[in-house]
Length: 389
Ligand SMILES: Cc1ncc(COP(=O)(O)O)c(C=O)c1O
Image (cartoon, rainbow, N blue to C red; front, side, top):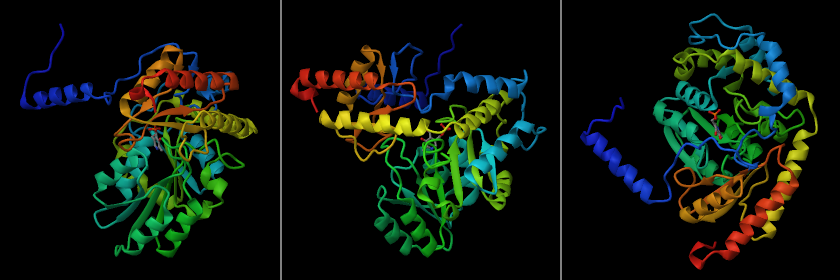
């Protein structure tokens, strides 16, 4: 027997909102399970999700124990794999310690909620990830959004703050634009005004720096960053989010971060995969340089074809279309040719900046990328004026 939702004033509102969304080009659906020949939607930048060496090493680590950790980390017996993973992360990031959360989303929300209160001023890049904004909402801190990557705007706003407690928070690689935060300049502002700095390295971990620990390392500002947040769900291709930094902050999060305290810990299989993938990344040099060169080549192909890739310099390459419906049309058109590239539309990106978001990864080759640009070019050329860029 199927159970339907009862009709109430609330369900009526939901139905109206659904109808309005469906009429626009903004309706979201979970992606179906389908075979694609070229997948440019994945954040598994190093393609470690199907790397046989990582799989074998993870199997060895779990020794047959797939699940486990069936309560919160505060309640249940700890597993040796958590300690090993946190120690590997602290070593990689060269920080005192680390703390693993269940996801990057949980890490951002939990850490910000635990750190700030109504009298804290938080300065946040306009294009920071939604999880950062959600954490700020949860703690009730005063939010100051500064223009994207604009240090002068940030400085002006910090200068006018009278709160003794200030936090500057930024993504290091921006997830929808593929550009990088000016971390050295941000750290100068923080130093001058006694602000704490938090950097979200979700898309930089495993890619940038000599040790590939992230953009913080590449910029040489490790000592000026108080909170280095990262995810294990992108280049590491596993699951989990993490903090790396001081013992003081780790203890604070263990005691106050609600997303850590009130949620069941990760299973062994996941921790083992994370550990095996980090080990693989740390022992294989050169894969990142190849990835970034391939991304640069693709950016050039798009630019030569007349597309705008914004200020992307990384493995994330937006292709700005502008109009929501046109973006959706192009994404569907690519899909018909076996190519997966998501149409990213508001509210994920600002109005009028809908785009195709391409993620370059180890498993795509230059032939694939040339094919994508050629299909896009011919579709644009064949469209009616309304459907062209
Ligand atoms: C910049 C940024 N931070 C945090 C997250 C959340 O990470 P996770 O997917 O591990 O929850 C994402 C995920 O898309 C992200 O792009």
